[in-house]
Every structure is written in C-alpha cells, then in structure tokens.
Length: 424
Ligand code: ADP
Image 1 (cartoon, rainbow, N blue to C red):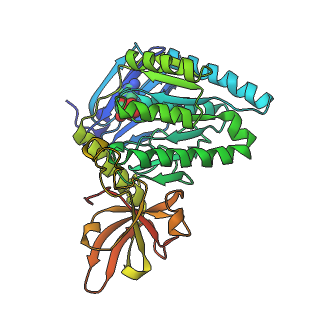
Image 2: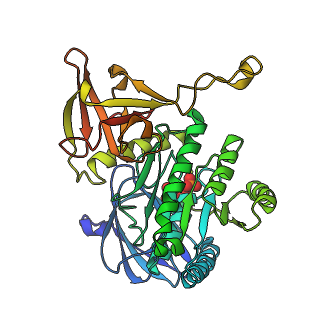
C-alpha cells in the first residue's frame, strides 16, 4: 500500500483503432495525457505529454488510429477500452466530404451541406464535431449549424445557432463562443411553438446564405448541421423542413433503420440529389435521462455567465422598467384546430409579437437581447446575448439582472420565453 499521491496515476495502452471511453466522476475533475503514439478526442488530436483537465461528468472517448499510451490521474465514474467502433465508417464519410470540398473549391461552387439526424443519444453532436474537427484540421472553415434547442453545443439552450469552425474543436473547452450567429427561440422543446421554430430556422438559413454568397471559402467548406433527437410526428416534419430549408445534400442517419428508410423514400422523389446515408451508432454513446439533460441545460447557462472554470465575472445591473422593452413571441399554446368550429382559425398567432409588462413573472427567467432596432424586426433578428433576471422591484420600478458585463445593453429590446434558470 502506497500513500503517495503520485500512485493515483494509471497507464492505459490502446491498440490501433480502439478507444478508451470515460465518464468523469460526478464531483472531481480528471487529468489525462498522451504519453506515446497519437490519439484524438472526437476528431481533435491530443498534444503529446501535456496534462489536460476534464470537468466532472464529462463523457468522452480517446480514440487512436495507430496505437497510443494514455495516463489518467484521478477517479472516473467508468472507464473501459473498446475495440469495436464505427470510426472507420465515419472517417470514410469525411473522405467523401473532402472530395466534394475540393471539387467545390476548384469550380468555386457549393461544398457539401451535411445534416446529421437520429434519435436522442445516438451520437449526433459527437459525429458533427468529428466531421468539423477533421475538416478544420485540413484547413477548411466549415460552418457548424446547431438546431438542437435542448442540448446545443454553440450557445445556451433555447436557441438555434451557427458558427464557423476554424480550428479542431477543443476537447475540454468545446466551441469558442466568440461570434456565433444566434436566434432565440426561448423554449427547450419545439412543441411550445413549432411555427416559430420553423421561422427561426428559415431566418438562420437565409442569413447564412447571404454570408456564403460573399465568401467562397466558407461556401466550399460547406456546413455540418446537427439536429434534435425528436424524429417522430412533428419532429420528423421538422427534420424534413430543415433538410429543405438548408438545401442539405448529405443526410447522415445515425442508429435508426426506420428513419433512414423513411427519409430515403421521401427524398428520392422530392430531392433526388440528396444522399441519405445510414451510419452505425457508437456503442460508447451514453444515454442521458431527463434529469441529466435538465442539469446539463442549467450548467450551460451557468457557463455562459460564469465560464467553464468560473473564469468569467458577470455583472449585476439595475435598470428602470422604462429603459427596457420586453417581448414574447406567440400567444401561448395554440388551440388545436380540431377544437375550433369548422372554418375558424386558431386565435393565437404563433409568431405574433406581444409586448410584456415587467412584473415578478420574469423573475429567474433568461431573456435574450435582440439586435433589432425596431420591435417589428425582433422575430427576424439574431441576438447579442442573454440576461438573467434576479430581482424585480415593483414599487421602485427597477429590474436587477445578471449580464456578462457591466454597462448598457446593446439594445433595449428583450425577448422572453419559458427558459428558466436557478442559480446554484
Ligand atoms: P446526441 O447528440 O445524439 O444526443 P451525443 O453525441 O451528445 O448524442 O452523445 C451523447 C453522450 O455520449 C455525450 O455525452 C457524448 O460525449 C458521449 N459519447 C459519444 N460518443 C462516445 C464514445 N465513443 N465514448 C464515450 N462517450 C461518448
């Protein structure tokens, strides 16, 4: 028995084309480094010798193409090696996309527009990330579009967003939050307002289309679009809507034969130029229950204000009610058509802009700060960032909120949905 702290370091030897799957412990971080060989985490190569620190609860895999030795320092919830992975098929997809990018560059045309679909916990975000990182490693700047309002990787929940990926994605930090293009939906499930979701997807795609028109480099690199895990009923319709709206020409279907076959049949007639490819789900993908998802959402919001390692200092600001103008989009849940007299239209227009009086109902909600100059522009405008309402003083007509920094907000137009957060 040794009491020396150094004895917690363990070595793991990985054979070629195998991976070490890790779930970091719930309350302590894990340190890890590459000692020999080469290895990558979701498409991003590990630097040799350097200790990396992974935050609690993170789930990831260290994969090696040719063999590697890894050292771990700290405890894990689980860790095991697996030699059966779908990585070869994933990298083959990458190779095909590379070919299309090169052809697009040579003829200054459109590169591939890839959309990744599949049920929840099929590894969509992870595959998107690998494809982006592999492309970035080869010098492309593909655009990442995240349509997942529940567990997105670009910004806080309740949003759809896009950002160029200029470097392989950092395995710890994730995607840099510098200049994403973000549209605020305000809810974490699309069923709250399906029409609004569609409108925002359309706005985002049109904005990217405009950016692509003036940028041959982005155009050739193309897009990787991540989607929600909702694939039944309206969820399926939303997938078709996204494929159509973004003019996707490669659909990657993860882990679901039925979805693959349905999409293949529908698209064969409607958009015959679209390739629908079936891919295996990795056995390493971890299923996350509703509670875990809720926690992950909360952590994401915390990370926006405080940083991943508590390295940001948000500012508590106080404003007069009259300084701000809060809007909600849509008039609550829509009455189903079937509940109305024949011929009558549902009263609540899902994309109607509703002015909201500031009162204590806003407490603990996360609001978006719109780039709109006029209220009419709110729906079609992207957002600058978010604030969190911490106090409402009705008597003095003052609102206290947390913002990433001090000083005036970029606009007085705020959007409210149902996105709440309890600061812990
Ligand atoms: P989806 O986007 O389909 O919901 P994710 O890609 O987010 O699924 O994967 C679910 C979880 O599984 C994530 O926490 C991810 O980091 C983890 N994961 C994915 N692939 C692996 C793997 N090969 N080994 C270990 N964990 C993995």
